[in-house]
Length: 321
Ligand SMILES: C[S@@+](CC[C@H](N)C(=O)[O-])C[C@H]1O[C@@H](n2cnc3c(N)ncnc32)[C@H](O)[C@@H]1O
Image (cartoon, rainbow, N blue to C red):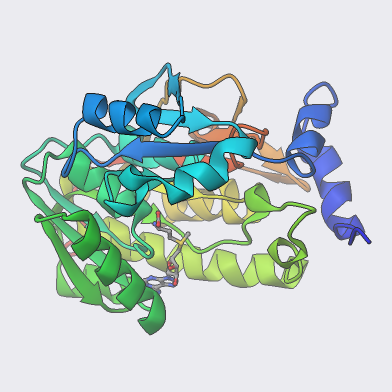
């Protein structure tokens, strides 16, 4: 028996996705997804990984926009997860859309980076690779069992530049004001971009109330993120949901709170399944610069995501928020 997705969600989806894109999105909720992975360049190089996989009969397809990323079809997933490179932690299985936020943050190797919602560590570890194990990544997670999973991953994948904090991210801005060059907020969300009919748990807890609850959390995390960022620094906000209340609406509120402090930077993403940030939703208009944000539509190749890159233009040290 197939459990149907909530009708209220489907009705919103039809208002959020242009009719010509809807069939691709609906297919993404039903058909098996392609498996993507990254080479863990802290432990192995691309050629060694590809040779080892090939020896086991696995021939991954390169991803045009990311030299360290590859894909295998659904039928090769089990073999990939049994392979020697997987067990040796030479590769990290990660959805393609989830690889975009660290690429958009683009820290230099010696930067000070804050990953405010870090477990289980996919993006922390990707950032560690992008920074060649240099600089400093402060990885914060508040849920204890998830923190220990993050810790185990950071140890297993060998990221030497990561410091772990079991802490509420909403408080970091107060304790470490203006201390980071880059901040990633990969926020807890209603996860609509990950819904799949084969796994009813993905949508079992969806409700408009949950969306409102998430939006409140996301706003508090973002305020903390802005406070912890040095003037001139970059903040990337990401969610894996399509709900405007958790995306443009949260950022619109943030831009009004920090009026004149934050600017939204244009994004040039290498994927075709993207739309600009919304100008309005349910009668509410958003800051016009939020059109520079990007909505990644779910496809069979990747999950749905939302991304926005902001720059802090002035200090927030004396302001009270
Ligand atoms: C979308 S997940 C992050 C995924 C992670 N960035 C990755 O790529 O593997 C959001 C995470 O934020 C954590 N979280 C929720 N509220 C938080 C808070 N107040 N402070 C820090 N982390 C929080 C959740 O427990 C969850 O692990």
